[in-house]
Length: 258
Image 1 (cartoon, rainbow, N blue to C red):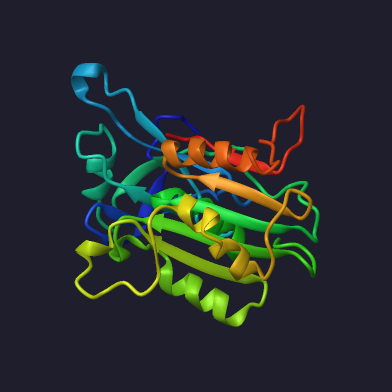
Image 2 (image 1 turned 90 degrees about the horizontal axis):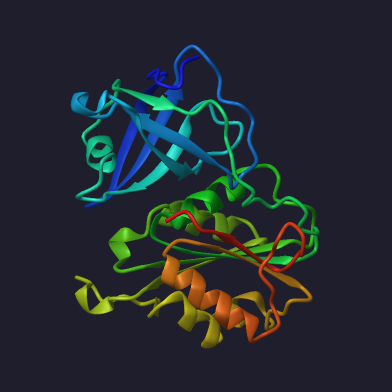
């Protein structure tokens, strides 16, 4: 199969909010490989003819479960980008290129079953966590997940209803959405406000978990805005957390995809 082949079809497009879509693409005549929740896929469209139509490729974290027939991606519009404006113009049945091999090490592999896991994200950085929570690989009894999702306004809270349902029906999952610009809400926002760092320092995480987290019992995943990631890495370091490296295991797992 050629890397330039438009080998997948758009089967669903959901507009979450202006500039945010959930895009589901299905392989055409082939099956997407089984992947580890947290990995990413490469999506592409042909480039301009004047540039030889060389494919314009971008990596997107997979939001769907490994058993899903389609690959689900959570995409934010970059108005002056070379690919996302064209992705936003796609309709059902349109063709795209989909990389035939998932990649990435931002997974739950190696996390002991009884550790608590805090999944921190901003914007579309939520996508890999949806794959984790939708999979059948959540770990054994004793493992607990808390999803902290930061956005500017509540309309940007993609997957909010699904996460609320997960939190309601599973004692192993908690969900904390946080809005950084509540003044712009048409209806007063009743939840957390500020940035995700404030939820950590303000005690919201400890309250949700029932006890303060520590490097001894909690692993932290970070995905989203680079400024948030670096700020959280610095903040967590003051509490004894170390960033996870292949050669030096730690408690903070980071996906730097921007």
